[in-house]
Length: 114
Image 1 (cartoon, rainbow, N blue to C red):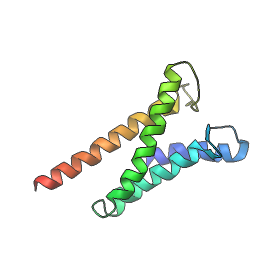
Image 2 (cartoon, one colour):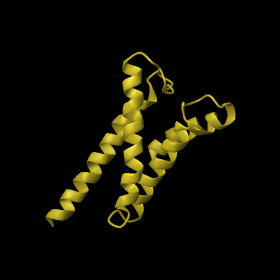
Image 3 (cartoon, helix red, strand yellow):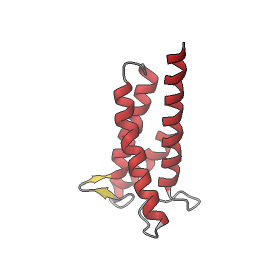
């Protein structure tokens, strides 16, 4: 839930100022990422076996958007909001998204071996 608590302030700031995060068409990326992390959390907390589709519907856009943002940042096109320390948050989101995805796959593999 720490991830959600880090994303929600960015979404709120974007709501107030309109310039806290990049947009995908008319949808701010931070809103989409917030919704996707919430979908992953719901899927993991409610019942991961029945809501596996919801988890993948959340994790896929998070990883893809973070990978795109990370790539743009690495090629000198700053697009991601920055942390207080100056680190692009897409790096953090990419790492967290991959870690959550890996952990979810690990749980599935362990459950299948039982």
